Image (cartoon, rainbow, N blue to C red):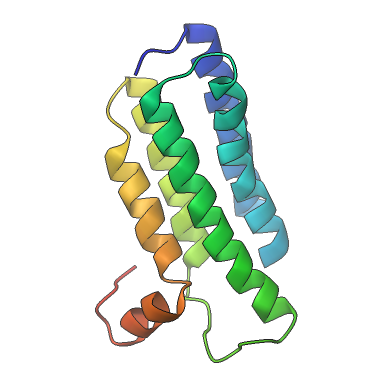
Length: 139
C-alpha cells in the first residue's frame, strides 16, 4: 500500500491508542466506541491519500463495528437477548487491530487481519453466534 510515511504514522498512532483503550475500557459500550476509532483513523487518511487497500480496511472495520455495536445496543437495551456475546469478543477484536497495526507497519498486505476482524465480528450476528455455540466458529 502506498501511503506517505507521515500519514501512515498518524494512522497507526491513532489505531494504537484505540487498541490500548479497548484493553482498559470498563464497559462493552466504551470498548466498541474505541474500536470505531480504527475505521475513523483510516477514513481521515483516505480523505488525503486514497488507496484501494485503505478503502478495503475502512469498509471491513466499519462493517465489523456496525455488527458488534448492534449486538451491544441490543444487550444493553435487553432486547434480543437470545443471542449472546461470545466470550473474549473484545479481546479478539483488539488482537485483530493489533495484527492490522503490525501488518501496516511492515508494509505487508492487511487481508489476514481484516479476515480475522470480520470473523470475530460475524460471531455477534444471529447465524454467527449459532455457529459459535455449535463449535463451528472458533475464537
